[in-house]
Amino acid sequence: MQERYLGDIHDFYKFLFVKHLAINLKVQIGLNWFLVDPKSIGKPEMKKNDGEKRNYLNNPKISSFDEKLSLELNDLIKKKNRNLENFTTKTHLKKFIKFYNEKIVREERKLWFEKSINFFCKNKIIFLDPDNGITKKAYGRTSLKYVLIDELKSYQSEEKIVIFTQFQSYNKSFSIYLSEIKSFLKSNGLNLKYPILRNRTSPNTFYITIGQSERICDQKLLSTYRSYKKKFNGLVELVTI
Image (cartoon, rainbow, N blue to C red; front, top):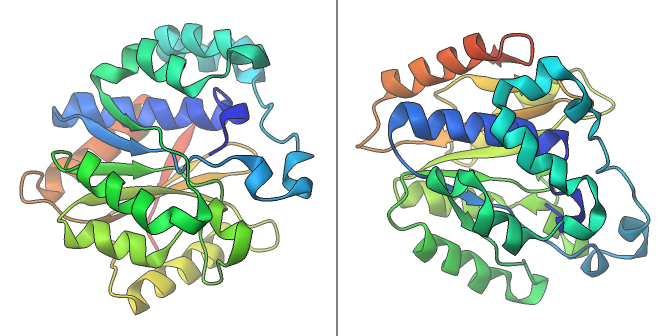
């Protein structure tokens, strides 16, 4: 996640989902932004302008799904207002979400991650929001845009339910793409027990769930996913791979 993207269509979907989870499961959800500075990735990254998908705020059908949230995100249309610390301090979402706002520094990533584990010690569900998702080949500066497989393993060893964002591949069908991700996770001892949520944005994003928690039973989480799909029908679908 990059601060300049704060409040775009992907954030709207993310907050709808995480808020729904928190309300229905009666827990506070931990949210790790996987916050990075585009300068630390390189000049080509800084030139990108792909976080300006904010027309949803002008669509009454979409913005009416959560008018309070839409009003808050409307303030972020102006670039000068996109300050993560200010947003997380003021937003009504802090009742439902515990935000981890620390930036990833590549040379200190292990320490950054260990701090996140401690920060979320009381949260049973953690939502991870890397720029791209997970990949088999993450190295160098571009690794900042991904969640690493060892980080997922660490969260699972802490008995957390982990949900992470994955962006659609541009050169594969979503079913083939998700099957490959499922195989990669399984080969690393991480199994998908729950449906994948597919957000009908452009590009599509997916919320992939791994892990388990003694405090949250499988049926309750499944029921919450189904009620989310029903509530926001047309925006999302559940995919089983």
